[in-house]
Length: 222
Image 1 (tube, rainbow, N blue to C red):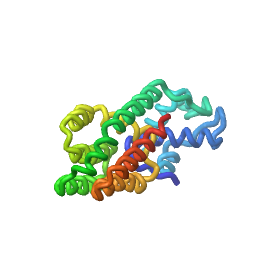
Image 2 (cartoon, rainbow, N blue to C red):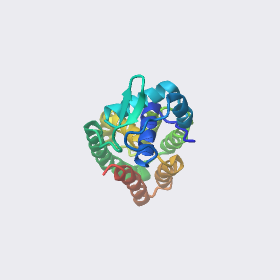
Image 3 (cartoon, rainbow, N blue to C red):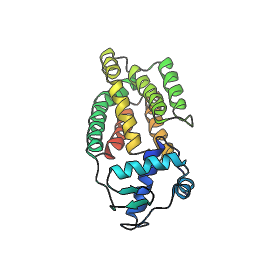
Image 4 (cartoon, one colour):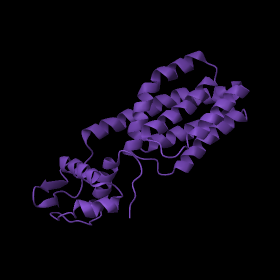
C-alpha cells in the first residue's frame, strides 16, 4: 500500500493515481473505485482524494459524473504549461546558484574561521529534522547554503546571495513539489561533502562537491 508523506498530499495523490492509470490498472472508460476504497490505499483522507480527482479532471484524465462515479477519459496527461515554465525557472535559478555558490565554496575552504565551521555544522545538522513541510525544509537548507557563502568572507557574493534568496526559495519549493527528493540520505551526504571539504581547507574538493550537488539538482529538470 502506497504511503504519501510529503505535502501537498493532494498533488502526490493525483500523481499516484496517474501512475496507476499509465500502468494500465484502469483502462480507458473504466470507473475508479470509490473514495472510501482509494483513501486507505493512498494513505490520505477522503477530502484529499476528492482534490486529487479534481486535479486530474482538470487535466482531462478523469471525469467525475454526478451520481455515477469517476471515469478514466485519458491514459496520460501532458505537462501543463505552468509546470513547463516552473521547470525552466528552476533550471535558471540552479545555474545562477552554481555561479555564486561554487566560487563561494572555494573561497570558504581557504578563508573559513572556526566560527564559520560551527555555523555550517549546526546548519547541516538541522536539515534532517523529520516532519517538516517542504517550505520548512527549504528554509533550513538555505541557512546552510548562506553559511557557506558567508564563510567565503566576500561581501559582494553574500549580497548577491541574500538578494537572490527569495527567488531561490520559491524555485526550490517548486522543485521538491515537482520532483520530491528520492533519497534524502544521499542529499544530506552531498551537503556534508561540501562542508567536509571546506573544513579540511580543500578548495578544489569544495568546488567539485558543490558543483556535483548543484549539477545533480539541475539534471532532473533538463
